[in-house]
Length: 382
Image (cartoon, rainbow, N blue to C red; front, side, top):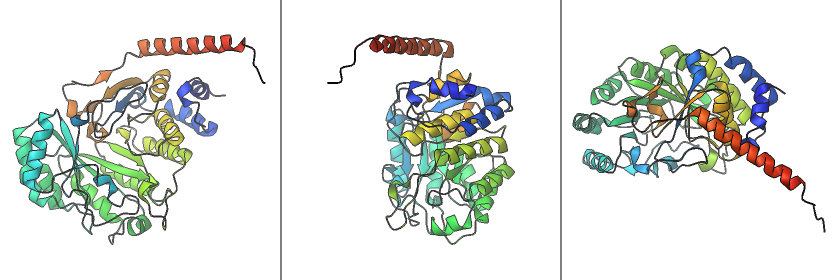
């Protein structure tokens, strides 16, 4: 058994998982070759637009990082993996006046930033045009309020207008397979348009944070490596990886759940392709045992940050010697070791790992002692 497999087996919360021994050995061998900064630090993000808590990390108030949709629940594309359902839980702000009102209300409730998004038109464009003046007004009135915008596909002029509006981070899903663009997104645009949009955004002063949805082609990995290569060519501020969740797929075209081992292998490839750029695991991924396995693979692959970590993930990071920080913000606003939403460090928690490991060891000793005592109790089989 490798040292890392032994570590995994010693964490009670990970007992529900089944780890691939060959893959774990590969992680362990590659980890030693990572740049020191990437190997040492890991940020755990708790985005507050979702309720969250584990036995290791307590969630924060829901008002700190709201998600706002300029189209409400409406989206023309009706992609097979989403069907616009993701927009339904967001705060609607369908006019510039409504956006100004919503932001003021959220700031009064304690918000320090927001995810700004909306449904796409038939060309995979979010029509932000009427809102740019209001976004600029928000940034002028509240300079510390951070805005991460899901841009969708953009022209050079649209990228410039996003920059001029004062947006802090621009996010774009990058798709690398034409079949996925056509079949899943129902979109009549060439796959190269995703790289062109990325290039337009990268040509501005924006912090560009592309996303790759792993398993987007009905649960299969198809264009992910091409998307990774496109992103590598444009040197983003950070890369966010998420994993397809088939909750909203139609029965006539169901999605499979991507295997955790396949996802883990892609984590390793992404980390190798971008060794000096933050690679983050976003909050979208399958629940249950798959999430536990995926999160552990993310830690072992050397990913820079994980949103909504499963129980046992912090313990694993600590036992592998990684420096752990917990931040109540959207992971897409992370750039390097700094979090734009928390430039002053307020609200971020640097865990005392020595104390954490002492408490962890004491808990494991208590569990072991309890097991030994139970072992002396006669078993009645009736």
